Image (cartoon, rainbow, N blue to C red; front, side, top):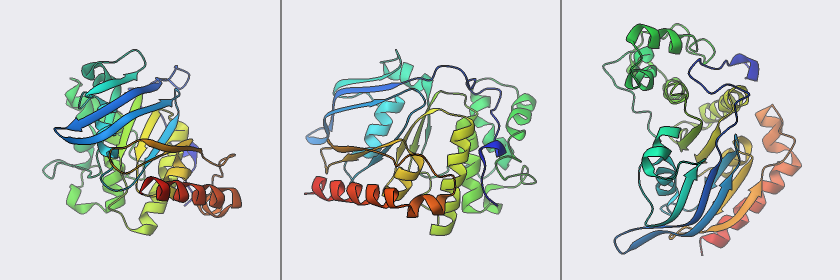
Length: 271
């Protein structure tokens, strides 16, 4: 069944659709683990409700950059700001981080896994279940509220993980290869699903992925990073206007040309 933006609704904990989004500014960023330099003088800007993709060679520092944005680490030098929040604690308060693995707790039901961010904020169990439960049908999870994670498909587990991230109500989402573990067919379906979710409930998003096609389909802009230490090789704008049908989008001549340009930039940055 095709994914439509109208299939999704904003949770009550989410920012109001008309609320000003939070921009992200990265200036002169450098980071290292001892003698190992991972990021070198990196500058990037993401507008409010913008969606930026990060692609680059394996081990180039993409996940480290995402953790710095999310406030899980502090940079060695330079600055990361989410709106007016510059310290790690302030960034973490404004950013919800979704790692590559879904990290669902096996002893909790799908619904209770989805409520974890709300429960951590002090929302009572019943209220948290009602809030997250309202989204289960729209996320293609109706009827699986009581299912254990082991009873869910890979795509369904990722939907629960994203629902948990979304209901945290934070204006910035940091997504670290959320579909990397899925097969090609499920991955394409999940990309279309995520595009619909973000169209209905816009946030400022930073998406790390190894898949250039995924980045160009889901993001407004794509930053191609070099081999470690990471620097920006090129920033590409995604083809516009965005085609709602994913298969039509990725085969459009403008999309194919953008993909080739991104692959050439990746090759340059890998040298």
